[in-house]
Length: 100
Image (tube, one colour):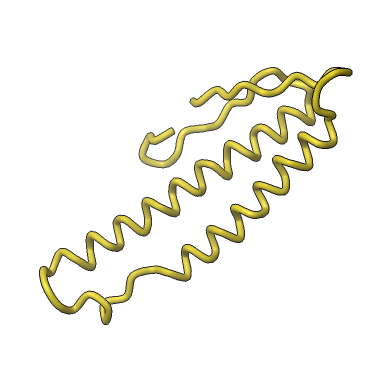
């Protein structure tokens, strides 16, 4: 489990609304980015020359890019929830396969 530090909302700091809006907007932008990256999935017609491993490697790399974007999305969601609830830390569950 990854533990993130959450900003403390107080009179002289960033407001609750601004923090929540920022994390939410960033999360929405990442959702759009994930959709766009998914649209760039490797296709066999683009890797038919050279080593047989090229397409497999490209697919692995593509899936890893999406996984990393999902990880950041999960962190932003956890931060937004923690700000909403007034917690000092946010926990992000591990990904499938144990990456965190």
